[in-house]
Image 1 (tube, rainbow, N blue to C red):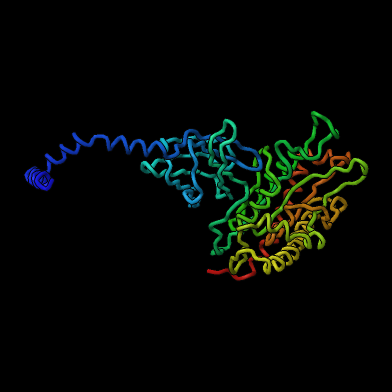
Image 2 (image 1 turned 90 degrees about the horizontal axis):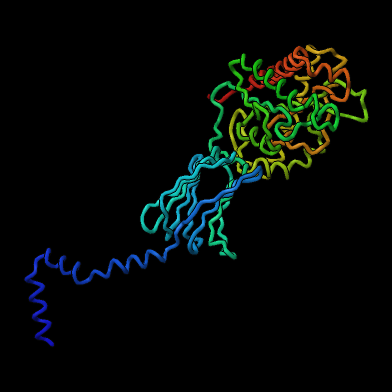
Length: 397
């Protein structure tokens, strides 16, 4: 036995490196098959599926086997959500999505054991990742839910005198708002059309001022959820939020005129729950600093919002009276209904009811270009006066 071992050692010593490699390839060619067998036991991403509605966009990765939780590592970079998957195989795949939240999903194999999944989002949104076990004919699945809630990552200090105003045309898309004739399947007049027309006129007027930037919650006939409208104001660190509507009171056909609503003290007392929904991971900005929302700051923020909303409402009412007959301006009222857009913390907000579709005179006026223009001028001038008063506060330079 010792003689055989000695001979083998001498043979190996005599062989050069090339001969050893040839021997390995020729004599041990079963090793690659072993590696291939190991690779086949690693789960493979077979398919990408998705569904989308107003509440969320769901992306599903169908896998041939189980992927354990610690091998799923997500991280958000700007608008892109990256998910690193260990001990997973995949072929390179790109899938375009018809979703208001996510435009594209890419599956990128890094090597034989690591895959990266890239979700290209239209804005930084909240997300949730979880796994589902095989069920009946469904395989193991990795599920990524993307929600319409915004995650603000770049709320910076104000470094110039540009004021941000959010104009919100009420209703839109599948939600027509008030209509005339009432409950008609094919109404001649729709609130959503009137509010958009007036809002676009307000934007046109405010664009004349170089120190004001206007952001619209919608610029065409589309449906925008209420929570998203409030989040647009929070995300943009708006200095003022003005929602434009037209009212309807079928049981009170004599009610008419323009009314500016602000949140009532009772409504602000209940604002904490809504604020947590609207302002989750969103910062509040004033002229001096930005800070993350906390329970202690929330109460202070809602108090400031109530005071500033009253000032904004007063400026708009005074200017509406200058552009519309005094008799048609009802003044400022407290909104007691649970209106989300009026309760965003840190955002002075008002809701302007431009008239009643159920009143014959208001109805005739609201569809006239000249009347819409006068309403828009009053609202725009009121906003201008309010943001001018803010400019008396020192900016950080």
